[in-house]
Length: 230
Image (cartoon, rainbow, N blue to C red; front, side, top):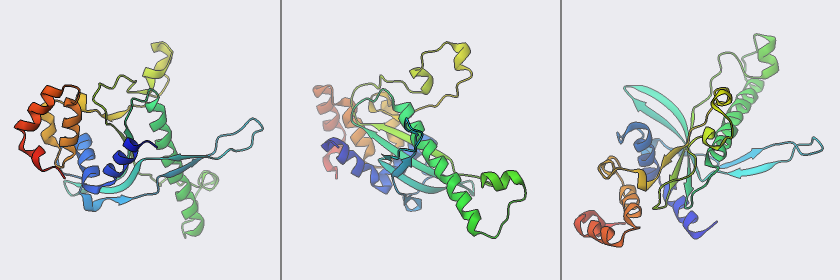
């Protein structure tokens, strides 16, 4: 892992910064997700694709940051699994990469639910429930993965799965799309930086202007917030 990747990973582990990023993405800056509601989760995931001989070959995948949250809005609780992938460079296969992370999380939830039934008191009511281990009334938590690009350039890579595929529209309408949730400094309007409530706004604003030294120095001199950055 490069020094930049290590720094951004540690930076986004911070609860306040993590909550700020997702409040920007999901709620337009409204403070729905509270830092104290966030709980860290294991970022290690195991997938078992099959090798040439048909035997499973374990592959270990590591998320950058993964947390569970209870988001309260209008007295309604929404339980979410939130993941962040930090990118210091543009990744042209990011939709597939994030889609895999999300799928692994959903599989893990289904498997954990099935395991809980084996030790619980509730018995399957149908043969289908017995065979799948997942009951008709079972539900799993939404998984949302956010990619944060810590680069000054525009994100030129595909932002959804369809953008990576070589197929015409007649075929694509049968292929479920996966959309990339992305925060890229170059794509944030200057007026939207006020929707952040932590120093993440300063970091992203600094990155956005960093390609132009004169504009960067002008911004730093005009914005008093940059005089006391932690």
